[in-house]
Length: 302
Image 1 (cartoon, rainbow, N blue to C red):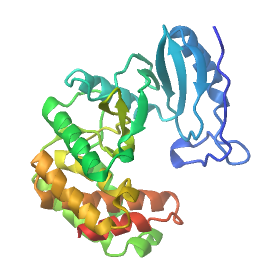
Image 2: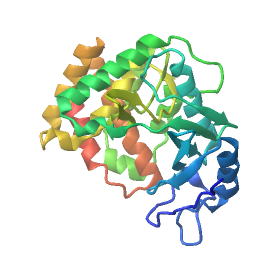
Image 3: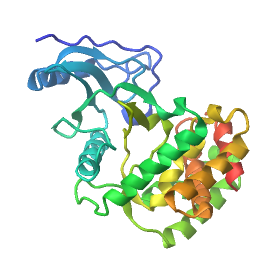
């Protein structure tokens, strides 16, 4: 059985989610995964294991099992990977060809999935078509499962938005009044919301093509209002808007409302609140993060 060779990208930057996983130069080191990978290679009978580059917190590798092309994923943050594989398993029981299947799970930190072909993300196609596909996926997920698994413990949106009450002065200087407005919108929205198990980060780069089907990947798993699912895509793939970001974002909102049946005002409000939160997350981790592009989206939604 071939043993994997770890290929480390020297440009990888450490993050708060990978504490204790960096070498003396401040770069990520995956050397500690060697025994774990070897065990999974043997357990799942994997061959031709080739780790992916541009890795950050998680380890991913392409491999072959029984002639099938697969992807091995191991996470540094065990709870996050456990929620991810559990989310995919849960929705895989309720949907047909919408989420990437989980082929195997081992413990809480590793799982195996099929490799998608060609695996290109939905940002590669015209924006109107991409928005229609994302809206249709949101519909499929919203309609397919009304139950919330008892295990694992998924966070709710209130836990996420608590950050806006405790942001640093550095973040407040960059985000200004947007923080208070975002938290105020969240408080209004959460009082009249339905609780579902959401993907939490459903955007262009987490929706991949597999034999002409669009497949959802990389869920965060959070409990909240279904219309919140529209928020993440509003700040992504801005290049496809060809410089007309404000107009393009508003068009996305109207198109998503038409596809999903959610109120456009509600989509815009969640978009504003969640994208301010995204900026706050980034700035709390690194106060020098450039959030200017996302703020253009936020201001377009005001």
